[in-house]
Length: 90
Image (tube, rainbow, N blue to C red; front, side, top):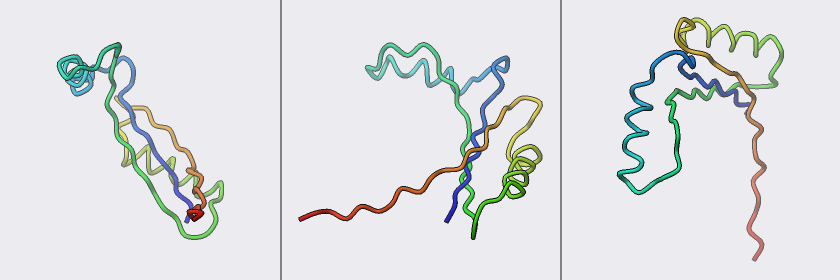
């Protein structure tokens, strides 16, 4: 089954209080070297059959009208390649 991923992130000029909270918590938990954190959303959409350019255009329209707020968020649409199942060799 083909899977399309829509990642939604706040635009760079928009404040990200959740990202700042995570950034503040990381050093307290012993993690260092992180200079910035931005928190977003990920949507995974699975489709029947083959993906077409028309289907991807529909996904972009979904992202624009429902999955993101274009005033404060950017989104990317990508196709996730399924990884073939690998059987363990005994």
